[in-house]
Image (cartoon, helix red, strand yellow):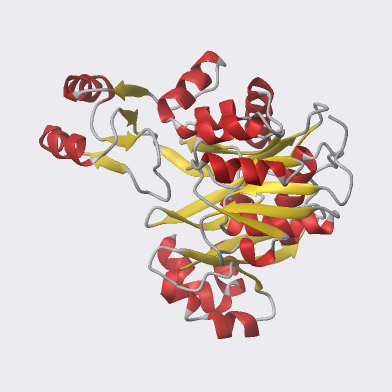
Length: 381
């Protein structure tokens, strides 16, 4: 595939905030974004050139969508891989459906990692109740029991402390099979965004440190406060995974840093990622533009960071009640996703705060820079 020329149409499957920000990035490069979504006025539809309304498994809608675009990508994983196969029979789809299938299924994902010598936490597949008992014996307590599909933002999982909790967890988590993961005594969680185009050019953004609250990403700090040697190892793992997948597009690789200084890959996401939102203000080319460049086979420039950054998610009604104060705070660079209803636990937007390169502050400095959002950040630490 040669580079897609300006004026071409980028099809994006999914109408959420990642599609919105990808469509805006596409427009900067001269592309028009066409969204396949079930929401007529969702975040991506608000900024798109065109919209096809339909389910992600509706073959008629998929064909109409594919016929109207030049290349296709997607903005979230909870879509039909079979639907992507249909789309790929009509237009190029990047990343490929086989990569989506791996990322959609935790057992397939961990099997792929093992086959490619990528370190992960100890794990066992749980197909029935007997498997769960065996996993408990082999992994020890406590451990995490997760659904293999559809879990996100802390949903679809349970921490098992002792044998008395096995039955309830097995019965409540659906669908089966499940996956049991041994606990990692981690010092922090980090992630790496890696992009690769069809020419085999590859580039990575700086390693990011991530903090969660109530199972949802709360803060990302760039660069991660880990040693240069460990950061280089994280980048190498991300590049190895991208190469082994034959990635065309953008991939988020989440990792745990163990207290012994080792890295273990947690999961992969073949799309723009929440932990890469800091790049929108701290990099000349952000993750969304890099994603668009990769799937349209444009050159990939180095993922340069000109500033240190902190990203904070805006979640639900509590954070959005502070929107007037956020808009009045000169250091908070606000990004609103255009969602009408601020439900509890719903990602409504994010803010970035920049610092001179090499001067990311400590905890008190981060809190002070977040202004009206500082209390929420302090409670999450």
